[in-house]
Amino acid sequence: MNRIAKWVLGSAIILSPALLGMPLSACSAAPPDESSNKTSQISTSNTLNLTSTLANSTAAVDAEKQNYLANYVRADTVLHSFHAHEGIWIDCVDVNRQPSVLAPQMAGKAIDQPPPLPAPLPLPPGHQWARQDVEDHANEVDENGSVRHCDPGTIPMRRTTAADLQPFATLQDFFAKGPDRAGLATSFKPGYQAPPSVSGYEFAREIQNVTNWGFQSFVNIWNPSLQVAADHSISQIWVVNNCCTANLETAEAGWIVGNPFDTHTRLFVYWTDNNYQSTGCYNLSCTGFVQTNNSVTLGASFGTISSQGGAQYDVELSWEKSSSTSNWWLLWQGSTWLGYYPASQYTHGMATQASTTGFGGEVLNSEPGGRHTTTQMGSGQFASAWWQYAAYQRHLQYIDTNYNTIDVTPTSSVTNSNCYSMASGYDGTGDGWGAYEFLGGPGYNATSCP
Image 1: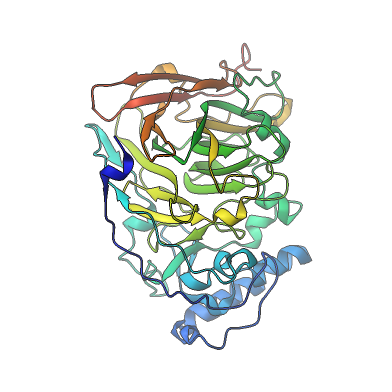
Image 2: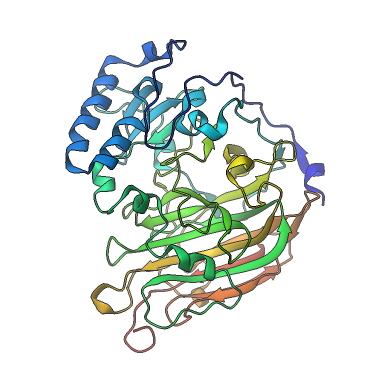
């Protein structure tokens, strides 16, 4: 069925066409915008809190990181701040003056209007919608009396601290998706096999080389255990252009546990324009993603986690290239546009189309102790454990260049099935599964995953 035929008109986001503020690079300050009177809306307590936090946090990091912490998010753009229930600080930033809007590539451009919403897809029996912890506590106040949500006209930005930056030698290392950047492009080749017991990325996923304008999936939420903080475990979707070349481009979304975050399961987006070499970052930590939604926080944790033999929680994620602007929009839970990657930041063709889709699990194996990590993928169970025990992605479809949604017919790409595995299939009964994939595993075992 044509995707446009299924659309229902969503609520328009009303944004000022004027871009307030001066252009801002990722690590340099810009002069205050005296035309804006919104600074006066920042409460005194929150202003002092933000200022003192930055002053205290910059002392332990080098000059480049100090400059980033002090200047990346301008203090006069923060209209409210609160201490989230899960422990992170969230700054509510003027949507028109967020770093990505103040960046040079957005100069003279208004924030884009989202595509119409597609018709919602219901959850099958036994599934529940995943929710972020900040959503469940949005009507509360923190210990300072500040409400735990951001008002319309602002966006929530997880505050970066010196503690976040300290494990990384450089700011670019903090932005990167792990240390072996070149290895990521190679891994998109069908049938990719890494040599056994080599530090780097491990996958249990599928890819399809097909011209597309987007991809959608229901991603099952788990909280895999980590052996060391240098590892990470991810379940995600990719839209990719120029697969396996120096000009590889991506828009990515999913959940992550570990490097560069912590042991919580957190929502993330990521992008690159040059095979992860010098472009890209997670979430809003560098200029790139333009957020338009005020209630979902990139980098915040999920408060609902699936359990073995118990409740299964899903998050619906979908990338879609706008037919009018070519920006790559992210849809959350089938009903909320979170924001977009501007077409202008893709310089090798992804402003026109993507050429590959991917979905599945990724583990960054740092080889602690000279052997394979015990960091889990998915639930920690192999794909053969199946429903309610292994992690999955379902209703896997790409969006073609006529905005039709098409079930995937992918090729598997598993690094080492003795460490992490996947199993795919198709359920055409109309119960919400469609094309699906189970994935996961425990990592190290002495016999077959040394």
